[in-house]
Length: 505
Image 1 (tube, one colour):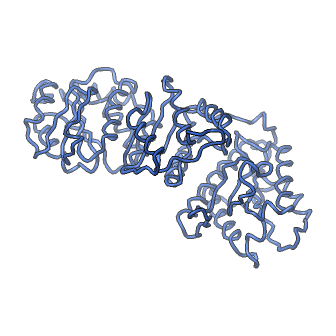
Image 2 (image 1 turned 180 degrees about the vertical axis):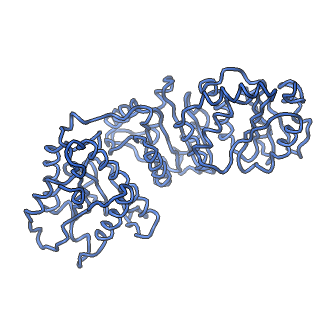
Image 3 (image 1 turned 30 degrees about the vertical axis):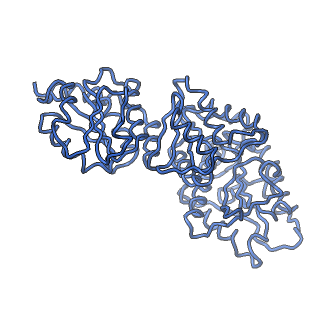
């Protein structure tokens, strides 16, 4: 079999319109185009496009399914009622089990595309390999009514991209496992047991379920993690009963380096048998059980200005803000800040680079101050920056409009290199400030070998009652100044460094 006959779309003809040129035809063309874009070569995505009545079986199609690498099932109410569609699914699964295994690296060779949901066939009641799978939903619920994505919408394009990317990765896996035969043969010739691999912990991330208001944000994070080569869990529909749900989540978390939890406006659904905790809360609490594990961390994020719907969610959010539990980074920041934090967790600390920079700094007699601020405060920190520079210090400014991975690496390098740190607390939220304070605590683990000469927070406008009363024991100095910048406000910080003559010896 050639690569040009590697993917088969199984669908009910009623879902492609009476003329056979409807939704499925458009989906077919769009999916093929994106797969070829990712692979960089031609690949045939084919289907039975003949219009037949009464599910007339074509044995030619059935026989060819034994040579197919991947199956894409476009599911709908009609699909589950079609004997023909279910036979295609069954035939492919039987052949796949004999020809390389139905699952490769714990990933199924059947891709479920949900065009229209069917209340009679929820995920836990679907047949065969479709059962329990997350699937790729091409609709959203509008007041309980499913609305299919418009072809020219971002939602439709993003879902096509997700599906095409995952298929591209599976085709490459299959190709590498069959390199001993022909370069275009796409069915692996070994058994599933001999090729099943588990992704390394450092590349495996647990991305918890999210409520509907944060679904797009979760999908964007999942997409970017996969583009970086990460294995994202859970990669299947989790059990709907409470004990099985908890067991599955714990089994996934054991394999992960860190977990990501997006907290939205709604409490979320509760698994069967659970009367108090939603799946959102459960996944967060189960991940918190590993708070004593130094090899694991937890990232909890909620949008700025989040308003809870209902008392349960309000209490849940308040509990998180009061006590996120040890080992957790709690952010209430813009979405881009969350992505920066994820990049920081994925980027290894560049220790050798920093050691070399420190040695050169000592030779030149420079004292480095790392000035950390929210990008919205760039203009406001200029008076501090200029004063410190004129006083003889070498000032490193955080942020910048560059690639997020570069931002994360630069931030770590600066924390390892600097002699003192000054955090400007202006337009950033208190949760943003907390993440920067936690980074100061993590610096030794990233490779910093000497203590900082000074650490301070400069609390400035806009003035709020919370900021006026802000105190912390995490740094020695908290400097309040809501008026125009005055050098006197920095004197305690400069005294802690060792004087205002900077690093000049």
